[in-house]
Length: 289
Image 1: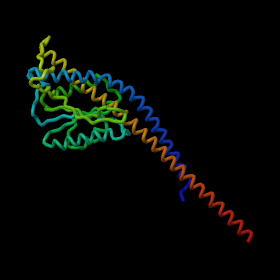
Image 2 (image 1 turned 135 degrees about the vertical axis):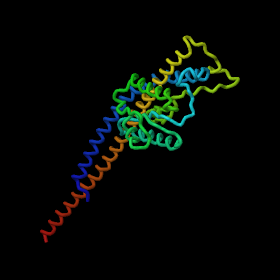
Image 3 (image 1 turned 45 degrees about the vertical axis):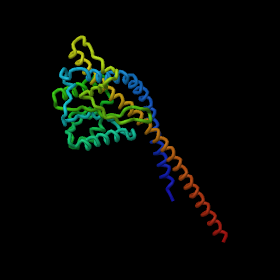
Image 4 (image 1 turned 30 degrees about the vertical axis):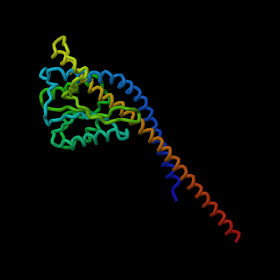
């Protein structure tokens, strides 16, 4: 027969946990609103800038800028964006699984990582793949200037021909309940395919003012910053959505556990009372005899 004191202790412990998960859900919901507004504001500009550069790269001379150099090399660099904390369901696990899959599927490539987030760094710090840089703790102080710094690092590595491909791996925010793991090529920029006989932006030639090189320098520098910034904003919104969903599920599960433990406690208490009554009755009968 279960001990009543142990059951009461477990009920109290689960209630304390439930209060924590409920508070974490509310905090994540508050942060999610801000993160969602930020990504919804930044996403249209970032996607349009990417679209413009895809059009330009299809028409311009690729020798004008090193970031347009399409090399068939085996040296890849992946910017891996994860969270600094857990308790957000499969958010971090899905990213690391995708990274491992990409590495295994491209075993003929020399793949290096730049990790952003303690969870991603912890998953790969003891593996063979070399981590060039680590940006753990980015969720505390990330801003546009930090994105510009990371984007400049990626551009420099590619321009120096230390790296032949640059990718970013992150969770794209779809909704509170849904996040999608995205592997996106940042460098070199993939030019839009020209379709013969079809009118499109890429079929139009451009007149550059000032010169082509100056415009591309400005656009490509901004492109790298904006794409890194968007990936981090997407990841931030996805993290808060995943954590809010996970904590909501944990709160409900704790409620169900409390209900089950309370039922067990009541049954055990009833059994103890019944046992004591039987002992009293038996003792009274023994006295009469």
